[in-house]
Image (cartoon, rainbow, N blue to C red; front, side, top):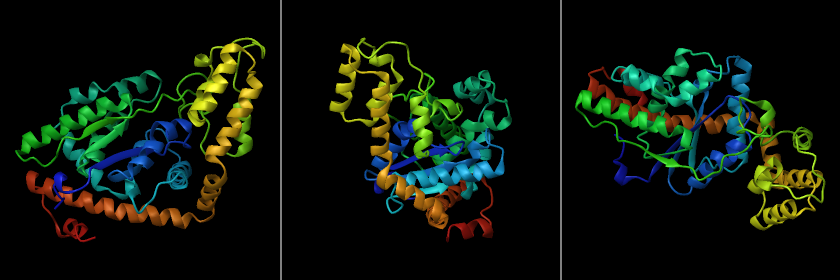
Length: 342
């Protein structure tokens, strides 16, 4: 059986979709915090390739993006001896639990999902997978008896819905199988994209990939659109994409110097772009870039990490499902029971 939460370290759960290359928004919005948390508790990090299928429906792309997410995490400092990293699809019990949760969840709850409404408003096809997203996300969280789920403000409603579904299950079957997880709001700032909005995989022109080729990153940075103000003219750094990105990667004193140059005049856009490029290379180049290249050269190393992580994650999932079967009356067959002995 799963240890009582009070008898084990705090368990953190988070996932990242393999729906594109990871970018600066992913790093500063989530990955940086995930890596820090691996020293503070028990961390389960999964690559959400089931969720990604709502937007990525080309086999080779899904495989490449899934590998890329894993390789990026490892190159950026995730330690598989401290945190589990695994593919969502390697734990099929999560889909089983999602279905079971759907049998005790009213349509009205899913219809109120802000993310679903927003995506449909932006033109994404209103498929069942997109509508069902909160139920699968709830299963992702509950199947590992997660204590805390680091999320941005836009995901808080999904955690509330997850708590609702856990309550529906517990009340329906009169067993407290699931604890209610807590959302942990990220303090990370919103990362502005190169086109002025939020940096997002859905807008390739807006992103700076973490491990893009230097020539590609240079082209993206140097093409950031600016106004016509000259070097000597004062500029508003708070409305400047170059400065806002530089502030994320630079030391506070370095950012303060660039901010002063913009406000008082003397800092030109061209020089600011060069400073940003140099800082991006300093933070994500060098040892990190070399480590990332080794992942491409030795994909088996990445696969070994994912398999080891999935084995441990699936063991935890099977233990939870044993409780679910007992509560619902579903049979714990010999095949399912064998999963408990992995």
